[in-house]
Image (cartoon, rainbow, N blue to C red; front, side, top):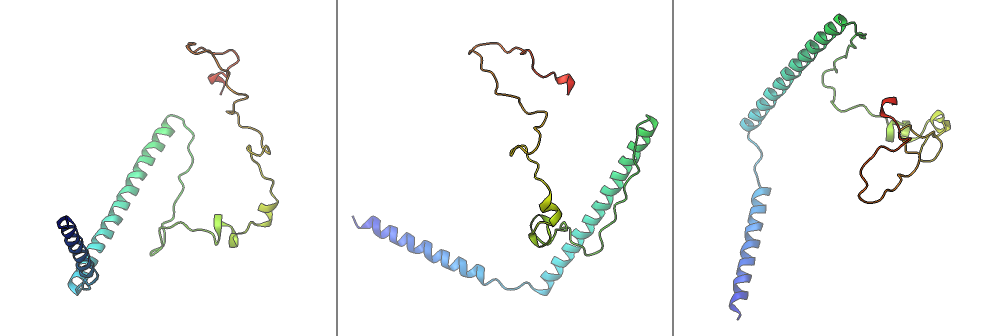
Length: 160
């Protein structure tokens, strides 16, 4: 009767010893050698160069599509607006968007006096008119098995 308990204890002890040795082995990894550091730096430089090349290729492709669309639009008499020039980010600039000093971009996280004085417009609170697509009342119930029909007075989709 004690035999299964001994096997269980032995197995539990072996698992604990294995976990302790593997944790110690992972914690004691040596720092990378200068050759490994150089290889990682070379790999990062190649990846950065490829990313820059891909970015330039994408920009050229988008410019070509835009130019083709503008030429076609002008030929068909469509109204177009002048393309907007986008300035390149300065070297070393972060890709993260620029945010305000506080929550929601407000200075120090507080509303400005003009924002605090503005009236709140909300359909939920009844301080704004309801949207056009809001139902005027609850849907009328029909008997089970009734085929779908068009109700008189329902909004006409062609008027929207």
